Image (cartoon, rainbow, N blue to C red; front, top):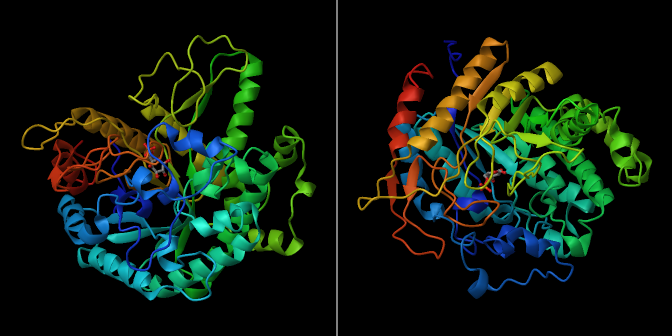
Amino acid sequence: MTKFPKGFLWGGATAANQLEGAYNEGGKGLSVPDALPGGTERFDITNQPDFNWEIDTKKYTYPNHDGIDYYHRFREDIALFAEMGFKAYRFSIAWSRIFPQGDELTPNEEGLAFYDKVIDECLKYNIEPVITISHYELPLNLVTTYGGWKNKKLIEFYARFSETVLNRYHAKVKYWMTFNEINSALHFPVMSQGLVASNGANDMQNVYQAWHNQFVAGAMAVKIGHELDPDLQIGCMILYATTYSYNSDPINQMATLEQNQEFNHFCGDVQVRGEYPTYTNRLMQKYGFKFSDLETTPEELALLKANPVDYIGFSYYMSATVDETHVAQDSAQGNLIGGVKNPYLKASDWGWQIDPTGLRIALNELYQRYQKPLFIVENGFGAKDEADEDKFVNDDYRIDYLRSHIEAMADAINDGVNLMGYTPWGCIDLVSASTGQMSKRYGFIYVDLNDEGQGTLNRFKKKSFSWYKEVIKTNGRKL
Ligand code: BGP
């Protein structure tokens, strides 16, 4: 079997809003997820024209507000990551801890000091911090006062935020990412762009304008980072779902190509190549506008061209199947990207279709397209874990999922792909982004907490903990 390269970044990934809690401590302002309910309401509510962002902590107390209390327990958690042998730990900085309203001129020192401690704790164990600058956590004020990312003012605010954190941490942190799953706006603009029905989420021109503004802001972060230290590695982050045609009907093949372009490749093409792809206008025509209808300037386009990202970070959980001709019987019933059921694949409880070969295909597609290093910064199996009376979880199903995906990574490396690392999602159980609840778990570490917010918050090693420890120890030889 192919060996993983020396220095391969094995680790795990989390995001501030899904685990820190302490939503009103340390000078933190409110963020978008602080204001969203959990459960099936989570995404529906953001489609309601009269949705208002009033925070009712009684109704919405749990879960994003309190997370898994990592804000107070990060030392214990990072020690457990170190025990597994992590080489890297991907986490995000809560924008609303650093600029509580998003538009201030000076940062909140208490927020900056918190991440000093987190970073130092990683370095104590030789764990390489990998920081996502913005992970589904816009300060709420940037949505209620400015209308989210469709407003160009956010470019300036993000530039100030990224400059602040890059300046502060660049000597200790080499790996960065600009925006989490930037292309996810196609399915849930509220989390990545702060767009809901009341501020125009249903008009795709707003989504594309917001993307343009994010591309420019991200390019500024790349420029600022490289000016501080040309060795910093600043990547983009794409939600990648390998996409198949349901059958060989050319109509489905063409629809698959278009879906690939819009969902999997458009955002990456701009951030990696520094320019809008040739198919841009065709994508936009579908929604009744064209590129020249967007607010862009020659200076912005030059900035994009001059500051492409250094690597492609991406998440991979599942593949998707397109059936434009409506011959398939079943929809995929997933709570993320939809499509039809692939008869060759099994799915998780949430309809996410399990497809390790799809990961090998993704790695090949991305590497052939860009020839820049790839970093799998999220992958994993969300499940309703059952803990026994000792709070032990026998998660063989998670081990099976991860093993098959690591084997696919090894195959892709053998195919010639340059893969830097692997940080499976939710290495410790945390709040789910799509459900806002605890019961969709990914961790190697079980957190004693339920959807109602009851539990001791104590941490327990699952069976996968010692399995993953061995994988890292043997650099992927023992699976
Ligand atoms: C990605 C997000 C994460 C994360 C993960 C799992 O889309 O970047 O924030 O939560 O998916 O999704 P979920 O929590 O909905 O199962």
